[in-house]
Amino acid sequence: MINYYKNLPVDIEPSLLYLVAQPGTYTGVSTYGATELYPDGLRGENKVSIVKTVNGIEATNIIAAFNMKTDKFEFELVRKIKIVYHDNHGKQLFKMTTSYINDKVVSSTYGYAIGKTDNSIRFHMSGSWHITAVDYHKIDDVMTRTDSKHLTNVFVHPGLFGVNNLKFNEQYTME
Image 1 (cartoon, helix red, strand yellow):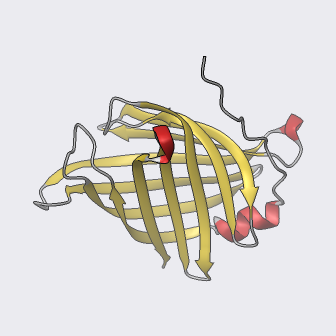
Image 2 (cartoon, rainbow, N blue to C red):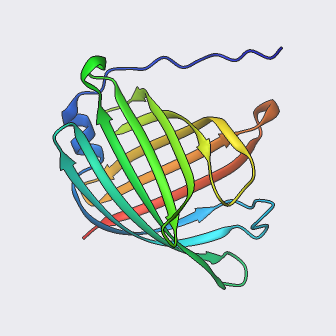
Image 3 (cartoon, rainbow, N blue to C red):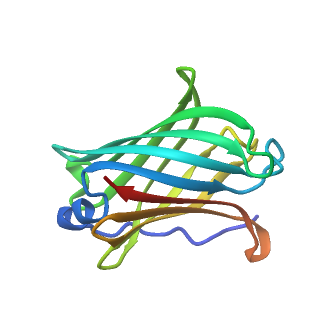
């Protein structure tokens, strides 16, 4: 039996959440690594809207995805994101995403905050993406506010022996 270390949740002050995931409208670009379904990888053109809610934030990310090598349009995806505090978990922060193509659920993730810096929040996530048949249980998701106008979100899907299976890199600029 293989055991692995389970990351423990950390408290995240709301002020850090609202600094990193600052409400507003963003445009961005993204890259998604090669998978068995998209062996050339994907390039995304993103439009994101982040709003503050009573218990965190909600965001909508519309991604137009193109083949990284041929630039052929592949699909448009709508990712709905909630980053919230649960009433019975104090300042522990939870992140949930659900992605849709043509109003059909194609991907989802769920996790919680396990780390922080002055300008970033790290989440431990589990879930699946429609671009691969693999289910991931140790996704490392780091949101970083690089300056007042720029936000990055990097998902790393670790594999065996320290080699990453898949990486998403999303870069956003606030309008």
